[in-house]
Length: 171
Image (cartoon, rainbow, N blue to C red; front, side, top):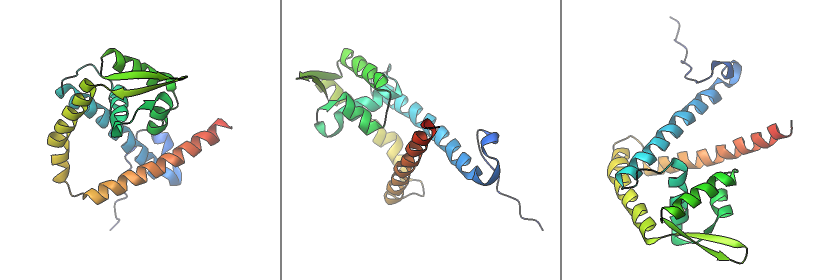
């Protein structure tokens, strides 16, 4: 009896031909996970009391709040691995206007930190995240150590994609 072959779950069949179809399956998983994560961030932030924020604005707010250290535009872009500084700059301006962050010019550099209101919003987000997401993750068959390992693998894979993008730029 013939064993059924593994079904390929990809978003672009033309990228899944030949030996490397598993990479296409992985990329499709990334697409689905990215969109689900983006939707989750927006819904969690709305439940926290701020309904008009994009996923990028939410990421920037949390990054600025991270460790209570002042950050420059270049710091935020570097930590989030974003090349398009203008999109992060626009998010920072929107967060300033919403009074969720404050800025301070030091010489030629502008530094950002969360305002009291921004820090409270991040804390409300954390509480809702704990209640709605973390509790559910605990019921999955994944340990905290396994989630950490997956995160490390994703960061390592990001390096492969960065290297491939540099190679493609030189063609």
